Amino acid sequence: MNINVTLFAQAVVFIAFIWFSVKFIWPHLLNAIETRQKTIADGLAAAERGKLALEVSSKQADEEIAKARGRAGDIIGQAEKRATQLIEEAKLAARDEGSREKAAAKAEIEQEVSRAREALREQVAGLVIAGAEKILRREVNAQSHAELLSQMKKEI
Image (cartoon, rainbow, N blue to C red):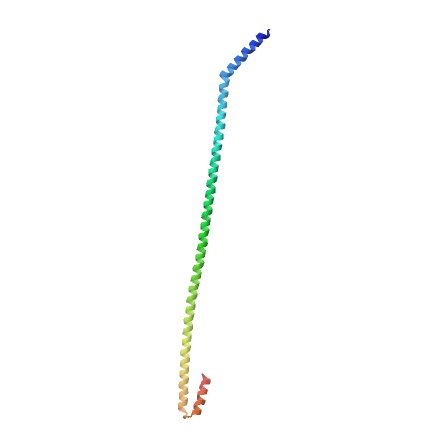
């Protein structure tokens, strides 16, 4: 065997192998590579979309939390305001009730004072009448009248 023929035969077989590979195997390999590239590209695009969606959702969540905190602050402020208002209303009601009770007590005291004055007037009137009776029953004498008046003063 000659090296030239062997080399030539190997070259022909190699060319035939390359032609066969290019004609039948290469398109399947390219198709598989393109499919894989497309799958990877789709996965990367989906990951990017997910990342953007996550950022948007995170911003929306932060905004909602801020709104909720604001609403909570408003509710707390309204509750504090209402509590203050209720306290003031209770104070006013207590003052009004105290004023009413004070007025009622003053009226009762005035009634008692006027009853006591009336009773005192009746007693004084009775004593005056009794004193006048005693004076009129006795004889008219300045000294006895003075004694009688001093006695009445002691009784009053």
